[in-house]
Image 1 (cartoon, rainbow, N blue to C red):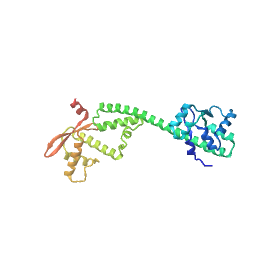
Image 2 (image 1 turned 30 degrees about the vertical axis):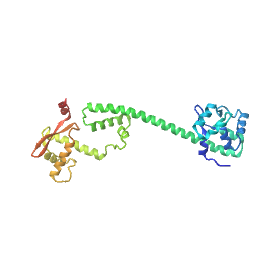
Image 3 (image 1 turned 45 degrees about the horizontal axis):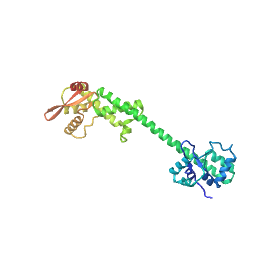
Length: 289
């Protein structure tokens, strides 16, 4: 007799709406090495062993559902009687009624097939539940992000990049969900190196304000201020002129951005060198309104 695998047996387990997983009488008889008529007669002779939750009889509509779902059950088209289906418990009880070595041996594989199918169903249900949970969390986090972004701008953060980062930080702290990382898979949170660079920039702006206030300053003096105060600001490895040019380009990229409560603006040119001014963000904002 051909040996069957758990996977092959699992493919013969049917699932119908409102019904427990089961095996058709013909398939069960074939696995147990007997006739369909014999197993149905055994169940009929032992009604106390086969209550309604151990076996059930298919309706014509259910037969059509099986035929439309799987080519394996096309044989139902020529069947004149309504087949019986045996649940996990019914299959196990039938092996005890038949009491043949084949039935006893193969009942173990049938139980494993039912267990494998149920495990697959639980896994699918868990995945569906997880997807729903992630979806709900995303929706809640998106709403929180929008609110936080509006608040960040009302608080005076006019730089879009900084406002988005602030909104994402608030969202992550209040919902536990990193929205930017989810929406942009390539997004990498601020690294320690970038954080150190930002701290150096903030130190640079604070010392600039303390030393010059809103006075127009040549990039030459700003360069000396960086060196004298040992600020970790990248000026490059060239000569004084190249460092001044590099600093001017860096400051030029910062125009229009709010950084640590300040705005950097151009203040003209003096002796072929750009002048720069630092203005408090609040004053800059007031000047625009």
